[in-house]
Amino acid sequence: MQMKIAISCHPTQGGSGVVATELAVALAQRGHQVHVVSYERPFRLGRHDNLHFHKVNVTEYPLFRYPPHDLNLANKLAQVAADVGLDVIHAHYAVPHAVSAMLARDMLCSCTTPVKVVTTVHGTDITLVGSHHDFYRVCRYAMTRNDGTTAVSQWLADRTQEEFDLDEPPAVIPNFVDCARFTTDERLRYPENGEPFELLHVSNFRPVKRVYDVIRVFEAVQRELPARLTMVGEGPEHGCAQELAAELGIANKVDFVGRRDDIERAYRDSHLFMLLSDYESFGLSALEALACGTPVLGTRSGGLVEVIEDGVSGHLCKVGDVACMAKRAIALLGDRDAWVNMSVAAEHRARMRFCKELIMPRYEAFYEQVAAAPVRG
Ligand code: GMT
Image (cartoon, rainbow, N blue to C red; front, top):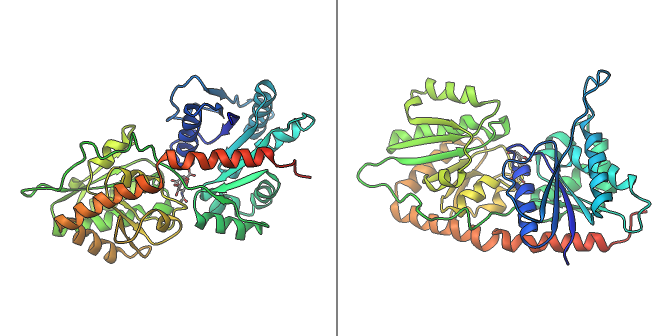
């Protein structure tokens, strides 16, 4: 069934914005009419006849010390819904998108076929923002009064249910990867004749990412093997991570390259991807690395254990256990056969479980189920 779907998301370089944008493009390619609504065009949003972007204007007015973006968003969603007859508004990241979407739905409630609101929770919207007492009630309202909720991992579904005491947990629809873009084509081979091993980290450098552990693990690796580290992304702990690399005397082996649009190239050009976070609800960057045949060193925490099979497509250690991480990285990189096998298993894992063609039907089925359900009383 072809549907009319609005997608509302944070347009910046966060994982939730990437997932929402890729979903919008994929749905448009599958024949749905998709309307992306945000204050800025999301950076990965491509062009397609079925794909429309609606900019939310944030109203400046002398009385507004803090312009009410969330109301502007609700107003725009209601306008799009009325103009095109939306079936579903899909809000990514609970705060504020789910609440604005519900406001839009309720503004239009006199319609014979009301628009339904689906929320996808991504992680920090529940674990940090939504559970904070400044947002808790509004987030619980969104989780209990929308028309359907999905979570990007079982771990996050369980956390969401516990946190908000829901009658039933969100449906789990895992994140996905574009297996035509994130490929092993021209990927870096195992080093020969003393060539360096290339290690990689990609994130928004927030404290939850534990970027200092990334630097420390690399410091231990480069004592045993010729190696270089590339740090992709920007964020609050960027400067301190650079300082730590200098303090440890390895600044000349660590490249801080900021944002990269050709991120698939960065994954293919590395032998090991490191994501050593306190937790990840999913770890989209780890999945993208796997799809490019790059084994992942991660933490046994949150939803990463649902993405990486420990000892097969990557290695997992306890959060903060730098000694374990360094040991695993050195053992893997120092053994050609082990690395080649893990690289093959990494690509296999991504392709068999997480290609977008496998996940997209699950979103479509969820939309259809929600659209067909009676309006909540
Ligand atoms: O933490 C980030 O990198 C950004 C954040 C977001 O919502 O933009 O990422 C969360 O959502 C991603 C997409 O679903 C997940 O892959 C990340 O694991 C998750 N981050 C955390 O849970 C810390």
